[in-house]
Image (cartoon, rainbow, N blue to C red; front, side, top):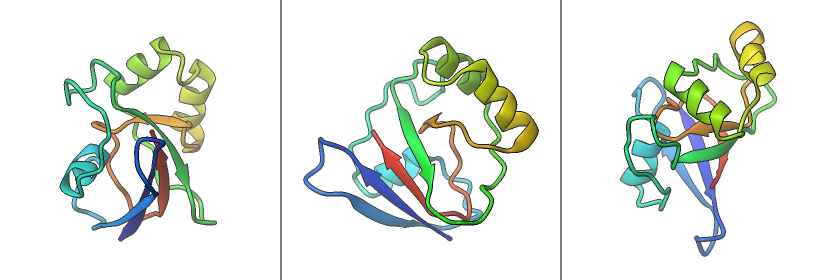
Length: 115
């Protein structure tokens, strides 16, 4: 069970929604279900238009990151994350600062999503 707070200059105020842990919904699906205006185009992890900054808000160790291959390639090519951040995500489970909303699965942790 997680609280997901969406924050954007395009919204009047931040919005916090409840996401059910284990539901395997992507962050984009959670946003769409609550009418949060996260921009997207392909929903397939290829265009990068849904790149968002994700910050874990709890004091506990972040859940496993599980970047998809598409996500690694698109975020690296767009300059959102570095090869070093990808390596730390894979070896140390340290979340990178940016994710693709269409690929990121909401876990059992509170997060702040800036877009």
